[in-house]
Structures are given as C-alpha cells and as structure tokens.
Length: 133
Image (cartoon, rainbow, N blue to C red; front, side):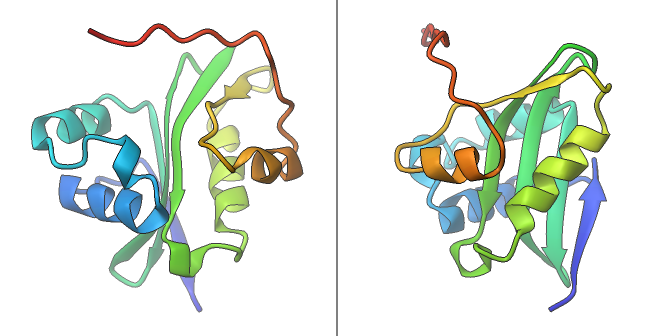
C-alpha cells in the first residue's frame, strides 16, 4: 500500500470531516458545521496529511509558534488504516516543521492514553481547559 504524505496541502472540509468521522473523532467535532470546519482548516499552522491515492486517510492539524509550543489539535487516521504506523509518521512530520526545542502538546480522547504513551508522550496533570462560550 503506497501512502504519500503532504505538508500544508489544502484539504476540503468534506475530506477533513470524512477522516474525523472514519477515525472515531467525528462525534467530538462539529463536523456538520462547514463554517467551523473551514475556520479550523484555514487557521492551522501545520497540516500534515496522509493519502492513499486520492483518498485522505489521515491528518495531523496543529497550532503553533514553531519555537516553544505546538498544540496537536487532531491526529486522526481512518479506522481501516490504523495500526500501520501512520499516526507516528504524521507526528514525526509535524515535529520536523518545528524548532528543536518546541514541545508537542495534545489533549487525548478517552481510551487513547496508552497510544500516546507508546509514542513517547508524557502524561501531564497540569493541563487546564476553559470551554468556549
């Protein structure tokens, strides 16, 4: 299976929503709100995508200052493409866009703590979240 990876290659709202849904992350996103979805795509600083031919199969979307901190907002792989190392590759390609001292930070979904621990992330109990609205 030939998977290609791109950096900051445009993806459509529909492609992004399909990957989120097919990865199991769609229920936590407002995938049916096209304005919301377009906004988060337009304002991503780093968008790394995995493609199987013309089909988007994985995406890592990040917001960053490129030197100190990078928030990895979504790391989504279609379920039928999971366990192939694509998530690790998307993470590595994201990190290659950052400065050498830049920390990669994310909020894990329920049940994914073991996955991120395997990828070398350290759990940090000092995260605080203030919901919008």
